[in-house]
Image 1 (cartoon, one colour):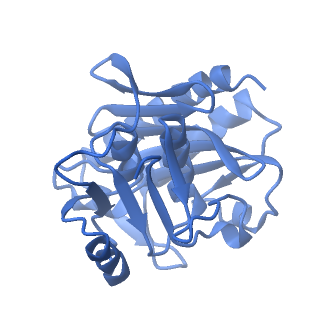
Image 2 (image 1 turned 90 degrees about the horizontal axis):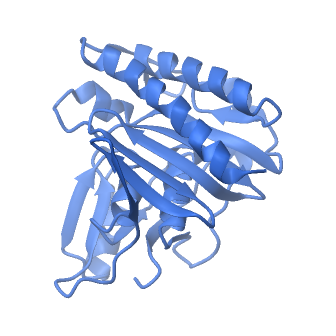
Length: 254
């Protein structure tokens, strides 16, 4: 499989999905609650429709696990599959406060590892792409540049943490590591800020699902970073119910 060509196709799918999200965002978005109590909006549904149609056209033989398709959550993870979150950061989307920290996430998983990922933040005009063996890049204002994790700054590590889901365990971990600088932001942008050197580490002890993390994880890996469990074990994909445990994402030198 040509991962580089597929990445370009995924970018071509993510961009119109982002446009559909912004069409709703520029109105007054409303939400309904799913069976698990989490919110879903017209934007989630519109973006998923675009993404699933695009994936069916460019890679019809690869199964898709998507947040909004509950039937796909019952799938036994195959060797190769897509993980999709059409609108990651729905709570941030609904705040409509100008921060714009919500994303379109599309990732390809092979043998439990995210080998390529696209993260698009349409409200911020930031597109992050990572492909195993080919590096990572960010496109903003029409200009694309390579990105990579940074060396530890002399002023101390900067952590990114969930804006909507910061929990006591994460807060305590940051104190234990003597990390005093924290940027709070929503969605998979946390991985991307580490990947492009705007932050250094992203600890997460609260619940996430695999479609929340896979695309950002792929970008970070391609940028030279790592994601492990807190015990420094491999953090992989295709777990039961596609549910994640705790993880620490950061640069290799952290």
